[in-house]
Length: 321
Ligand code: KG4
Ligand code: ZN
Image (tube, rainbow, N blue to C red):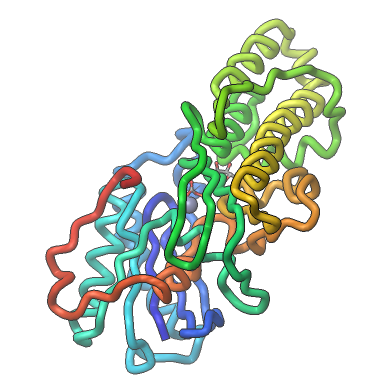
């Protein structure tokens, strides 16, 4: 079995996954409540909390699978991109477990991890496909040719889609993280109530900062009482604009790359309107949309293991290579 470790942001996660992609256990300790009062993730607080949680999370992961370290034959860990201090906690823990047992270690790119959430049982997706990766930190269109060969076709020029959700939620006075809150509130609102612009830029890239500014100006022109009564309409209209931008570009990219199959991964893939707007698309199962370690172990099945002790000097990286 592969023991996966993920600590790139504010989730301390570990998982046990078999070589054929079956999840034996997956534990995600979320720090959301810890960061909520600040309206976003505070890196130093995240690192410290990872430090407290990593050992109990690893123990819980083995326990839930009825396994011991004897059952683990390689360790997988997120090397980046993410918060450097947070990544280092997972990396150090993974190195320690691997080295103690002289096991190989597979460093995994977090974004490849999100894509590999689609390769898990019970319904693993087979490449090729056109993948939209939409999370709090990234918005990417990737031509997934096979398990190892990816081509980046488009990305965001400013905010990520999840970031647009989070910033929009803050403007609307909703909680953090905002995606889920907007998703929930939008169900009660009229998506046609406000006309928010969707940036049309050449190529296959995205831009969400103009949309956020449009929401800001709209909210600013409302009295507190009006905001109260129109909040659901604003959420619905804002979400509609983001979903339209994503879906439009996914279709264009699929056509350009000549892909019939489309897939969506990352935290924003949990969005109910986006899921409905792409019938026929392969969607990461809800628990695997947001950060988790099962996807990291899954990616390790297609990654290059480093033998002990070659990985002891391995460093984390903050931004995508
Ligand atoms: O993949 P993820 O857990 O972390 C990163 O790697 O960034 O994605 C988190 C992002 C947050 O921005 C959050 O607001 C968004 O995913 N998100 C959603 C929903 N659930 C989470 N956005 C829209 N609708 C949702 N239901
Ligand atoms: Zn992520």
